[in-house]
Length: 412
Image (cartoon, rainbow, N blue to C red; front, side):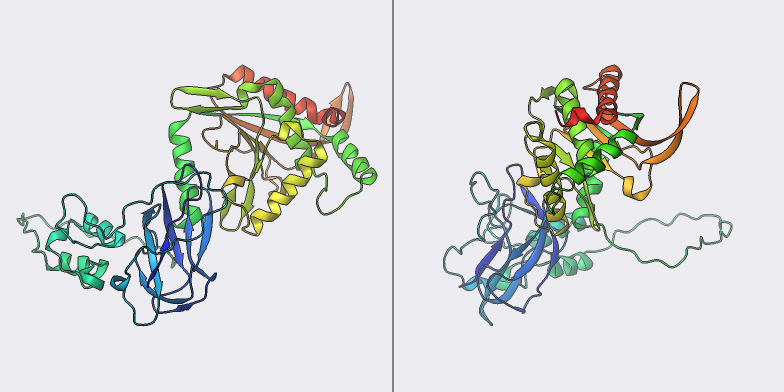
């Protein structure tokens, strides 16, 4: 009996997922637990494993198809078996660990729906293509198992439709225009994590009133403090006490004093939080992820260092789950390792603030009439002006700066 590979629920707010890549092709043999298809939600990309050993006998959803939770992506069976031979409900993929509540399985793509002829069977990809090409599915004959309509059937039906005749209007011959010459390049469709990031960043800029404030912190004393702390503290692979750790602690302490920055703006509501769930952006080859340090305000500097390091390692190994990427109330992001000074970080809605950290540089600074070489750190705070005014945002940034310039405050 054919076994379904279904779109799983990978978070409370997830309603649909996108097919990123099929790792196996129709007709390939698969082993139980072997990765078959890569999918993505709005925050995470994940490979689904085969629920049973057999052959991938059918693929229901093509790459880039958006599939509701519970609908089949494909089927695994025995060689020569067709999907129509399945005689009972097939077991689903094991639930994702971070799933918090069960929901009813969505309507199967090949069940009759309102407005269609009875027993009309259509794959999700074919239905999407038919809508795009304005093809009436009731006029299409399916070539798939049990008469299922496929993308190929829709494409052939579209070609068979009579072309729309348009009246030719005499025109004067236009002056010749030299074609624009572009260098050779390689086009790549935007999919997976890159597509999710592009949509979220565009939505962030469209739906919020973003303003960025900039300041510099003299971290000469902080660097000296960090060096002494690392010498005194038993350093290991979990705790390194990096500058990022100190910046995170400085931001957390400032958020406790300026809770307006530790808020969410959703609809017409501003929700201010007592606890700080700090998001720390991690750059990957394929995009950016933001693991979250839960209840960071209750953790020591060493505990924060341990969690940031562990999260970064998990992110680069694609081991983070949806729960570890959700629930942040404020985010910090750094481009310091790339030699960047000030920049404009983009908000991670519904958060109302994000702190951008640049690279430390040596600069001459006046102390009275005396000029000294100091280590200076650029800070860029982007905030949602709908929720926070300029003065309180500036006060928050000033406290972050003060915390970094008096590092003993970070360990008290």
